[in-house]
Image (cartoon, rainbow, N blue to C red; front, side, top):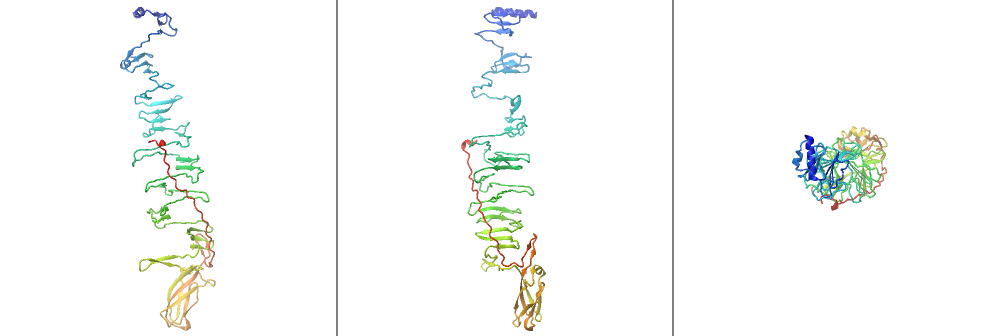
Length: 504
């Protein structure tokens, strides 16, 4: 019965068309009677008509039960041919619907991507290289976003360890530009944030004319620049109370800022204030607020117990502090090779203090200067029947030289007794001296005494042997040679051209 129905259908078709040619294995439909191509089961030939496939809506197409692999229909809803690949319906795309290898002529409404919540993936050598997630994130060399925040992520691989590089060969170009141009506010936004977990590397390494870097830094900058005054790092701030550069360390023995230079005429650090009333550098310790002179100074140093600590470690000649006030040289804590000086000046300069007068104004007092190094003491004594003995303070006696070469010098002043016949000093020793009334007098007069002694040689805390006792008009040290530092000057901030600003 089935064979009859098939034959009847073929006969009906033959009589209706008139040009049906049935052969043993295949069928040809044409107006010439030509045999079908040997490789075709059905061969349709016409120069005036076409082949019309079954037409149906998308709903009708998807409702076909168990479609055969290779089944072809025309979808009137979409306006395209669909064929079934054994698993799903596939659209047959053409020059107006597909992206062609030679490109497409676009109207502006086309797009490349997905219409559902699936990522768009790109491959080369059948390996995925990039994907665009349904939420819009772009991932290069990985398939899952590391963070939910970035719009773009690129991940390095063993073959390509650098996640991204940017280059330009244009002299005024930028290899990479990043910016946060949100409306000004106090939110935590960054133009760029760089980080590394490798202690042998850096969070950010920057070089000018060089590929060098300093390992183990949050930011490493290195410059090879033939331009005078080249900078490894240059930062600025135009806020009224802003900070151009801030160094900060929370380590127990850390340094906020460290400057280093190995050149003979270079400097580890230089500070400069171009204002006539400015301060070159200000420093504060002991968690103390910083004070400075309104008139300005080279440095303003603050501390609770000690404002400035200065130390010289040389075993030869040297001082802890060397100062020059318009040609007037003063050394502090100076070692000459034979003597240790608290203060030593070039030229006659006084050691002075000031006291208030009756009007509240301060008046200056000056210390006496001597050609030798002396300790002095004062006291009061009283004759008893014309005689008195004075004992030296044992601390003083321990630190002075009293001998034939360095005699004890004693000065006596009788008080309120005009009948005293005068006194003489006798029996001077390292422990004291006697005061005896002259001409056999036996008064009980009161007197003031003063002694002057050469300071004894001493072993200083650093082990040096200071020859104090014989010092007299020793040669003064020559003034040290001074140099003038080259100030790098102010670098004016440059403004990016309008065409290089991404928000223009």
